[in-house]
Length: 431
Image 1 (cartoon, rainbow, N blue to C red):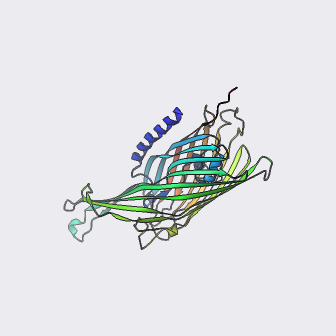
Image 2 (cartoon, helix red, strand yellow):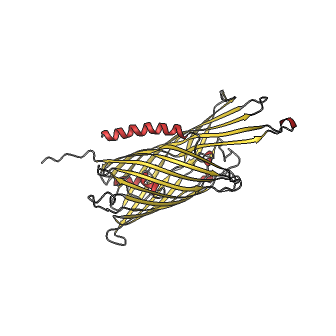
Image 3 (cartoon, rainbow, N blue to C red):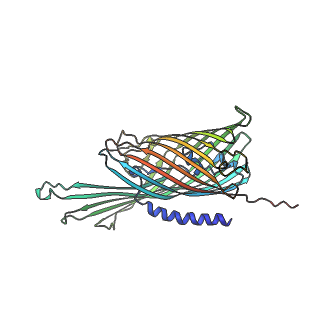
């Protein structure tokens, strides 16, 4: 228990430092819409393509599908950090490199009735905004005296949406499990635009647009488990999840000013932002205790996105560059030890490999899709405390293309996560 409390404290402290470092660093595509969308936090899923909807929650807390929470046998507390590097290339082959670190997420899973009823609580980022764009242009006012002057424009953003999730899973019988999850969504997206002139006759200007969003939604999950499908020791899972559409209350304040300070506040703008539903389908096949294979599909009709407030790539009541989002992923996990708890360290290490492809939900230019492709991998290292593991994940991929007004991102992410497991609420046996 002391180890768990210490872990929570360290995660909170390092998370605060990471957010401060991350400001203004990341993909330029996070400027558009509500930012770069992120899945529910789960270290194991990250290494297997990013979803893992049909996985049991025996070795990790799978809030993406609340039906899996019924599998829990131990109390689990998981959290970690992520480090990311991005190299961006535009159509003129101009490159820029950025890096960031952030708190990945936190989950707590508790079995109320082991392998029958389980609950979980989690915190993770739903979207991430972190970009920095500097543009230098000639100042042309039609006067020959100004022909040698230029001005600079900076676009910078930070923040995003967070979610606090609570879920419960119930196993009806050996074959069917159902689950329910509630998500409280909240966050602040801040966009800053600055104009700096070299000519002293003109005054620098700064505009800060802060948008606060808050709301809630429900997630439903179901899982069908079949055993002995092709061989006596195998099992096959099929999972279906549905995150209902929701409406977020939105409040925007715009601050304008001259020089480096924005202190003139405009009137507060209120409205609503509607997020579409999300449907997920996952399958898992485990021929033996040593190997498992998963495939997942997620669909979100962002073409139905609407908001009373405008965002980059979306104009309220006007042009919208949103499109339906489709994500396909899969992975394979190899666990040499199987169920042998006395095997060597290397045999008790789990090895994971996955891949994904995703069509972006919003683009800087109408009619141009921002597609992503990536390879994920990871190892799960055993510790002296049975059930507790340290996960190290690596994700490399590309996003967009360096043509027209788009840019190509090449990125890598390294995640370090700790997954504590202990048995609580067990009666002592007197002998």
